[in-house]
Length: 385
Image (tube, rainbow, N blue to C red; front, side, top):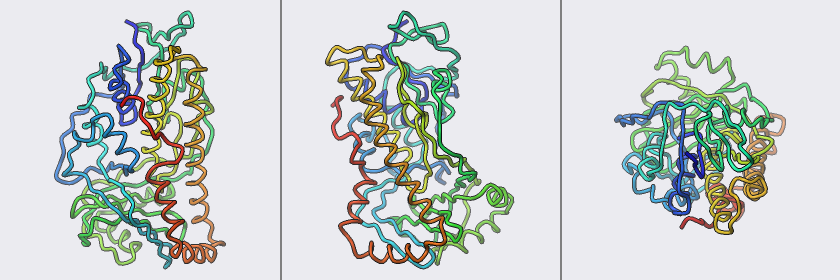
């Protein structure tokens, strides 16, 4: 069997790519493989701990592949304001368009919108170049292009011998769902604590919110050791009057890293999403950058088909790599700069002055909001529409 494209990883980024390629009607055979079991999604009354902040650009991409109508809208919360607090200083970013959505809601909606072949519980073990025209996968089938959308421990990246550089922050992101007293679900909060670590409170449909708290490794272990009541007390000490009434589910965590693959493409190989890059979650942009990767790669593949180019040749894939690298590098540098700004106590006075200036500079704030909603270097047109 010969496939046009094989996508490794059935998460939101891989499913988005499959949806865009399918909608183009230009590819005959697309396959998605994933080493995990097929998800059996059953929504509970209390939202899941794993939520994603989706921006205007990602929503537009979902709409373009007819996926948005498959979302359970009752479980999505749109917010239009972000309040950033730094030890008494307050920044307000209004009139943005962001959505807090459970990961399972995204996967479920995207899976419903596509009809490509999918293989679950199927592990990528080997890839072999075959006469320059195809890759042989696991000695079983062939593909013109293999796409790694399988996370920062990507098997595609490892088997392709593509290296990674960057750093591990030696921090964890602690997440859980909480019940809040304030019923205004139009505002998200980000608190920068004395050690510079952010605590985000993201509004879900009333009365719930999701917290994402950056903690050092020892503090993370300590937070997990606390009872719900003790942890609740810890949270409310840092939220400046924003009262949390209840911890609603288990506390989970994930390691925080800033990583980039040396290459996003090789001959018949392309990387997207966390397989290509990862960044600190403080700006809520990680998944959105991955969705933009999928759109940029889909545009590249479709353009090459239309012009008669081989979709898997490195020269054909080069424009995708160039666009995606600049987009992701610039975003990663910006997020890292903000992280360092809030982590450096010696420039606290400068942050205070900067916040006062920025609060009076609506034009600059609007530019920042526009950049977070839709990256200026991200996809603007969709070749599959």
